[in-house]
Amino acid sequence: MKHPADSNADTEFRSHAPGYWPDAAMDHWHDARWQLRHRVDTLAGLEERLALSDVERAGVLLAGHKLAMSITPHFFNLIDRENPDCPIRRQVIPRLEEGWNAPEELADPCGEDSHMPVPGLVHRYPDRVLFLVTDRCASYCRYCTRSRVVSGVGDQHLETQWEAAFRYLARTPQIRDVLLSGGDPLLFTDDRLDRILTRLRAIPHIQFLRIGTRIPVFLPQRITPELCAMLRKHHPLFISIHTNHPRELTSEVRDALGRLADAGIPLGNQSVLLRGVNDSVETQKALVHKLLMCRVRPYYLYQCDLINGSSHLRTPVADGIAIIEGLRGHTTGYAVPQFVIDGPGGGGKIPLNPEYIIDSTPGKVTLRNYEGQIFDYPDPSNPPADALRRLMDQCQAAT
Image 1 (cartoon, rainbow, N blue to C red):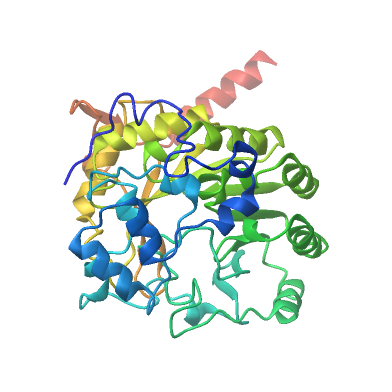
Image 2 (cartoon, helix red, strand yellow):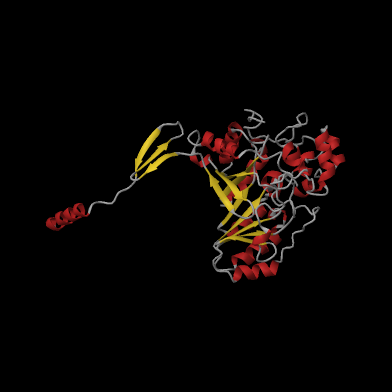
């Protein structure tokens, strides 16, 4: 199912307010707290605004037992009322297919629980850790890797042990990089987030901090000048956002990302490859071009994890490789993300690329470029000893 980006609706930066909320005053609309209070999180709230398909209605009824539904008004306004296959709609409105678990699917597809030395702290890679600081998001993605603990309605709950985590970080000197995630850390108040970052900054061997967030996309009103001023105190600080479709990059999102960039924060984007959402070269190209206009570097394109109930959204691995093939050489290298698969069960990120090496023999590698042209590249050879002696003799004679 392909959904090429429309040249106008998806490639331009637009505001979609007030959309489904025509009576909302604009001062309310730009208030993050108003947005959170007016999230669509019930079947009645959906049906008030959309004509649901049978599979959507059944999906909503099942969602309360697995992963809560919650959609901010800002993001809800991106939904096409008439199209049940709208790429925004498929990301946040539950579907019946979520209730079926394919044999290969896992509750914890990335093996995070087995790599927790302290509850809430994942230490898989030697020099960096994932710090799960909350189980709540502004809106919930239906393909969420952590649906087992996020949103509070599943059987498993996140139990971060804060002081034990800080003690572990302080006594583990090889850790130089801490990624705050969850849930979404930017749901915290400025003061609470400031306290967490300050505690981490006080550990001498932690060199830089990262925040993984979808708040700039779901809730751009949260990215205030005050938040940005607080964050800039904690440099070097990086932020990874999560955007999957060019329509998500509205004028409000662009401005929010601009405030973060103006605060000196390097921004990267992580997308998940999703069937019927962004599984075409055209859509991906429109997305990465808009990201660069927002001063965000496309970073990762993830193969959708083997999370329970996600088979209707996962694509063949070959589709991701074909997308990278369609971007490499056809747009700037800054716009080309790295396609990766998280090894099931905790293998970490495994990069995948189109095959550009045709053959490799001693002294020569045969390559193809993005146009299919073939080139021989000679592998380096060491200068012969007699040639080096002659050069040394010439140098000595010259002096």
